[in-house]
Length: 447
Image 1 (cartoon, rainbow, N blue to C red):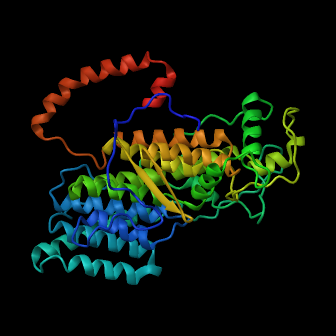
Image 2 (tube, helix red, strand yellow):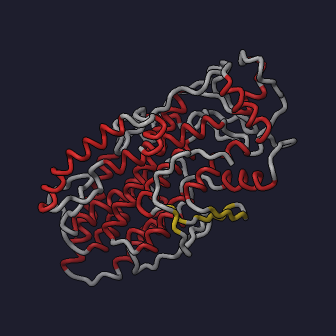
Image 3 (tube, rainbow, N blue to C red):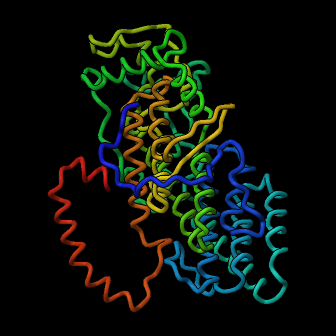
């Protein structure tokens, strides 16, 4: 397996007994356990991955954070300031915020959200604290819903394939039109715009880098006659089945449960995870439709049109996995996994990671190692070029670093710590100046 990080910027590997099993529920969070983890488990267990999964997931986790934060007296920076909506029971605040947000964005599952709310509220004694907590949660849910009501989700967005060499065209077997070009223009949560971390262009069709990537996916990703090993085939099938971010979110639930984080710590962590997921998807789809790059199956079948004498066409070539119906550069699945993994490893360090999909179970020394195999698997499945995955990996790293650096969801320092922080600014400036003199590759790897 190719190593993608010559410099590791994570905490040392620590083995744990608790393993995340995606495709089946994570280690069960009891209803009377942490409400943030419980609601996230309910959401993941019962809501299949969908195109706009990121909108309800980021919305209800942001609403839960701000509601819990307000109920506790606002120890953290909120995402939204909601005047007067504060106090009450923390569980009631989280439950009402989650229920109201999910009900508005996933009304088809109203019965589930209502029963989940009842389960949580039954654990809270009746009285003014419960009532105030519910009011706090409702106010913060309403604020998030109002903010995201016109964020561009699902808006009709015209896109017509050009038919030019190097550009995307519908792919077999369905030859479906490009899916969801509107994702490129949805209002982001924390980034300054959906092109903020846009990668540089893919390699030119007549370049040596493109030729190497072309030959690699052609040899390893074919449905028939591939040079893959049996294990590589299993990995390709596993990651092809593991659609969406659930496998990484289940890992987050297990890690947070094992660490015994407080409710406000969990609220901040999962708000960051889901907001980073949403922003990573918007960033990659912005790149996808900006560069409009063709898929390997199109490139290999039409290699005689690419102007590169080193690439050889195979008009009957078919990939092992089915390519998603949109352009390839950069890979959203890799960017999303990278964003989530980098945030989790910044919090917990590198810990063992397992997942089960398509009757296959694969285990890794860490989530970042799983992510590295996820990238390779897209080549073994024949659906992405290596440079597609590497660009996605970089976007996810940038999104994670940006998300962790923003004020929302972070703890507000106690007054006594301000003097120490101010004194430390000079040290930070010196570190920043030294970083500017570091080799570019090192700075990027550790960003």
